Image (cartoon, rainbow, N blue to C red; front, side):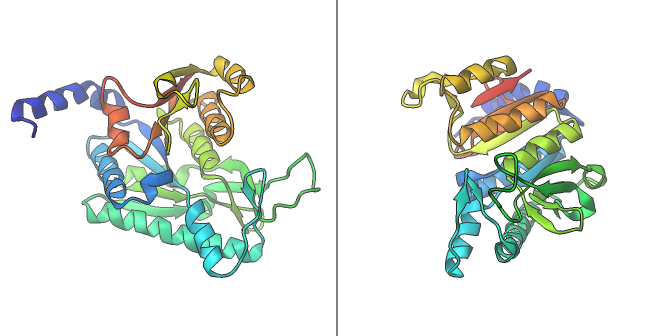
Length: 288
């Protein structure tokens, strides 16, 4: 149990960070185990509420892949993937939108229940995320269906929500030219949104501690990566597999004006606060 003096010391350590990020926007991509474990879900909700009350504007973008797969399985519909992307026909899109809507409202309810104020949004709301059909191999030879990529972000609705004191919780469903829905990778939406908002930070909650120089050596965690180092790390296979799209979204955010991007372990309780408000931080930070 911490003494009163130790608790005061923690608050004093956080003070310069509260001052630095006051009034700033931090985009958080919520995924992995932190969306499954109830204790971690509660911790994330409280982290967001604390940030909001000390004058920071958190914007949450959530995924939902495992929940979508589970629902499709229950409905007897087989999932298929091409280059890691779920082939999404019209029936699958309806399931995606239904599941994403439930996840979104569950997160909003949790934040509200703990004393915060949250509003759930889809990328369709106010054409927040204008989407276009994603093509592979430069053409139509592989049809992914209603899988999209971001064409444009229109952040006005986010400003309206945050200026009113609310935390936006966003599901990554984009709106096509005719208003049709498109399923978009949540990491990509978070990176594009961070760039469009001019966010000070982008934080990705994952199920790993960050980028390792050697994946089998837990002492080889890379704490800081510059943009110009990333191509070499990919060539060396230091960054590979599922880490590549996460790093790519960090690159998109930073080249778009975001101050820094952070890949952190969402399995650690209050990992967001540890990254934002402590001297040492956690995970891997990507900087210009």
